[in-house]
Image (cartoon, rainbow, N blue to C red; front, side, top):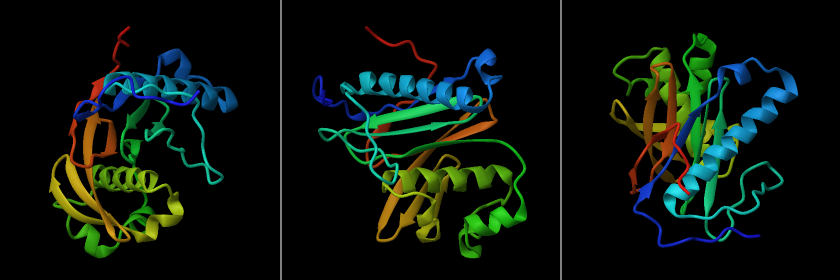
Length: 203
């Protein structure tokens, strides 16, 4: 069954973030991956309902990128402790990253010197912001990390917003810190954003 709109789309984007229960965080291997995917899809269902959209069967193309159905776009992300998802009426990407130490090699791989020059402070928190912003944009563009070299930070707007250029398109990215240890980045176009943490699905 294809996804159809339940009503006129609300003028907001509704990203949903769900904390993984502690007992599920202890899972390993395929069981862990499977569980995180299921929980991320649950978050996606929440996002769709908040936005007034109906999700049908989720499909991906040959490269693994989510396929829009009936004009509805979607994106998922997960880490050991949190999952996040978004359903929207325009191309969209979402990504989450946990706080940790990153090697200097990764800094060099992630961004060019002129991109790091834009940052008021170059540290692991800023690395997380850059990494998730670029991942979100590449997801929205329908490409993977193979597009990383063409994805450039073009502006640090403030502590929670930035602009990212991918080829000839500039994307607005909104960010949200969760428990001060995880950051979520979302491509936002021109719609307002309403973040939902561990929501209760409306009937």
